[in-house]
Length: 515
Ligand SMILES: *[C@@H]1O[C@H](CO)[C@@H](O)[C@H](O)[C@H]1NC(C)=O
Ligand SMILES: *[C@@H]1O[C@H](CO)[C@@H](O)[C@H](O)[C@H]1NC(C)=O
Ligand SMILES: *[C@@H]1O[C@H](CO)[C@@H](O)[C@H](O)[C@H]1NC(C)=O
Image (cartoon, rainbow, N blue to C red):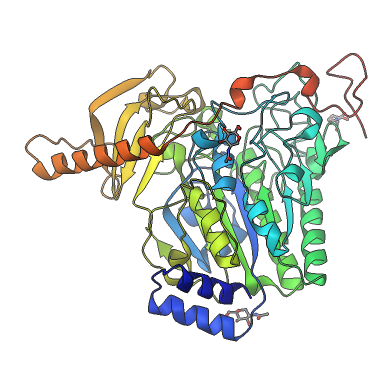
């Protein structure tokens, strides 16, 4: 049904389809292939240079490398924020975080706000078509009063995971190798221990990190098996805790990489990807499942050798330089996606419209910022995306965009370092590099200078002057279309909202502990 619907819909909407895409659609619709399944993998604080298939010399990522070798690997793929919660809001809604109000910064365990319930997530787009939906891992779009912002309230039938970052609670044992490794640095004190939630209930507090990935693999395998047994199409969203600080790894992967704790953590995530692939093979649905992989923001360089790596890109997490927001991305769908590499411009924003298109689902009647990238996937075709907008961690109408990429050029209107990107030799990344306006904007050609080392001077270059005028127009038009939603994170926190498995225990927060 899927592809046939897609074809009908495209024709109805007068979409232009290339001949190859059209042939592909006809062939698959005539063969009566069942609806497509979707798996969305979202790594945490993972840089452009962290995967084996993106050139890291010591990372061990055999399963992700297999997805890249047999799928499509993106070189110019962006998330929408250099920190976690806003990036996730955009991924799931296809809208910049400024619209949904998921800014500034990130949610905390007791946050009053969350991703507003009237925002439509990918899961909610697929539900009317009868999809089974599940999320596992790091939610980080709010918990709220009585769990009102948990995944189960946003279109997911099931959820297993830690609903925020796993350093937002006291340190725990994190790996069995070497024994008794705790956090390297500090985790948050004065808040409840890290909960593992199953749907809306706390299953375990504190969570056992050494067993967590196994629990996720079991949950996912069970979900895929049940859905396929019922012949139900499914959507699985796996935002992983890996490779966010502090690094952890269970017995199967601790000490197994050449890259220390970060490498072990990444290897454990990769092993879960391998388990998902096995589940798809065993249930016979590998060929009608689209797997998408990317990450929420750039590496947290302040963790030094225990943080990620942005490869050739400048700075990392917290900044609007390339290292903060350009991410590895892979699309894998054997038999449909021809293996290769694409340099087309794409974004997490584009995932919702693409999944909706492939499933034949209706898009929400809201202002979307994403564009359909089906043609890039099935045809190595051109992107419909012309520009990418860069908002800082604390976007405001007053400052507007910090940077804008148009085609191969990126213009910075403001630059600023970040605490998350401390410790690298490049001073521009550091927190002491305060907000700096640029007029004319700092301009880079990202194809010849992806590291943003050599600003282009428009002096005596009418072509660049014309380009800057065009960038100015695109910026103005975009900003005129931007309505800032009420800040959800600005609503602050209430310790009584922190998830506690024994709500009336004393003394809080340390008494919140259950088997
Ligand atoms: C959600 O509700 C808020 C508050 O009423 C409103 O401002 C916002 O525009 C709504 N968002 C959507 C996507 O409908
Ligand atoms: C943490 O490790 C120490 C030393 O190996 C051990 O005694 C303790 O039981 C562990 N704690 C937990 C919660 O596993
Ligand atoms: C899946 O597709 C691949 C590549 O087209 C093909 O070799 C394989 O036989 C297919 N497997 C199944 C189970 O259909």
